Amino acid sequence: MTSIAQACRAVLETAEPRAKVKAARAAARAWRRGDLAFAFDVDMPDRPGRPDRPELLPPNRMPKRGKGGSERGRLALLHALAHIEFVAIDLAFDAAGRFGGEFPRGFTDDWIGVGADEAMHFALLERRLRQLGSGYGALPAHDGLWDAAIETAHDALARLAVVPMVLEARGLDVTPATVERARAAGDEATARILHRIYTDEIRHVSAGSRWFESRCKIERIIPVPHWQMLVRRHFRGAVKPPFNDSARASAGLTRDYYAPLAQS
Image (cartoon, rainbow, N blue to C red; front, side, top):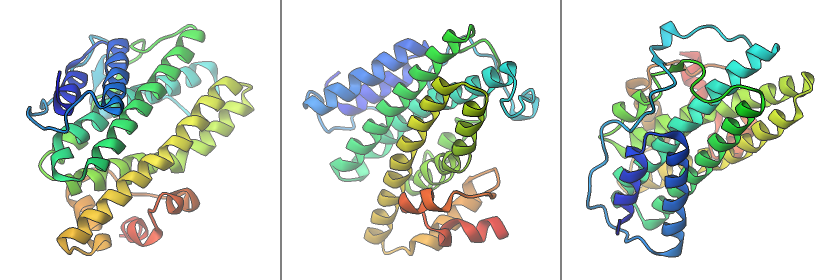
């Protein structure tokens, strides 16, 4: 591999979870060292590699997991979060490899860094699952997460609007309460992992907001109404409260973006 696009594609094509984490970390190290050219000479795959397990189900067939109060519920929650982070590795490297050539080099810096973070998050959650006697793949997982990448593969602004500014921003809303539930159950190890993920997610949403607004400025687009249009067009879920307004604002995502959608 001689280019950053080739490295990104290699991460995406890796199916086995620990091998994907290793590939993501290696790509990030090689990029930081300057070993990879800022070149986009290969296309990204339509779908990334996936392991045989977990079984991937449509959203409407996923079993209810509760809120994590029981041990079984906590395992189901940790498994769901691990799967989110696993897919997030691919979302980050796909963003860098698919859209990096349209932006200054700092865009690639940011999304390769996000990808390395997501790999670390998955590794922490997967290890915690094993400590609790389970593991990634023991339960079925949601097969709708990659839909956001497919839906926005043609448009960098749509990708930024939906993935960091909707999906990751939702993590800012729900994670603090999840941390508190883990602590209330006496699971401080899980609480520390989730808090680490939360603080990193603020940076990820910030990167999305910053690049969205800078691209809008170049194209002479008013950011807020354009974001709302893109979300209505490309996001299949609902933008719904409660919102962690302070965390969102610290990431550059102010209420004028999302509040009107929650009310519509």
